[in-house]
Length: 213
Image (cartoon, rainbow, N blue to C red; front, side, top):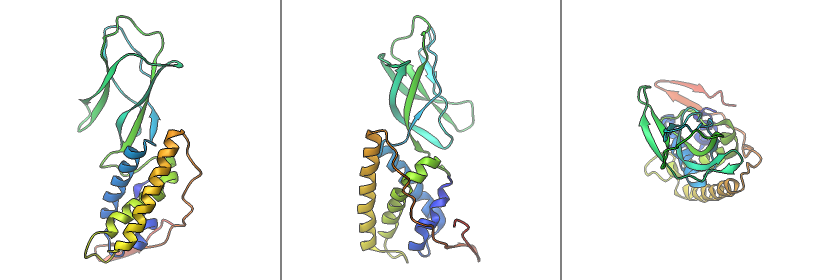
């Protein structure tokens, strides 16, 4: 889902706010949610351990995401017991870096089974989209994060200290729910019950009605 699909759920409460400001806080909200709840887990491509090779680049994560940490490493059906570290290596692709998985002890033989690595992800700071399932389940949490941060700004048309406090409490509640979901590897029924509201986007001297309806 594109991050700007949150507009209909926040812009009606933020009169005069530029959409690029909402974009910035939306990305921050998704990153905060993922870091603090550990909800965005993803299985990367299997890694084949080879003799005399200790470091492996990790592949398979979605575009516009970065790895926070490793959640689980399995060899077949069993936990991977060997010690390892994570690192970052510059890639041959311009302006990109790869997360690396490095074994503390260099293998002395090829492994009989590949290892499967589950990681926790978050959107990059420049992300323009987020996983569809993540958006559908936790958009309401990020909505509250965006609103509480923007409404507490002073001397804006949308300044609303009381409304910000309400949105903050709701953000905290939904963050706690996300943590519980992560602990139980459970995604609840979608929370996007709130219907989107048409709003006006102003660009220069032109205005248009949003098509997110």
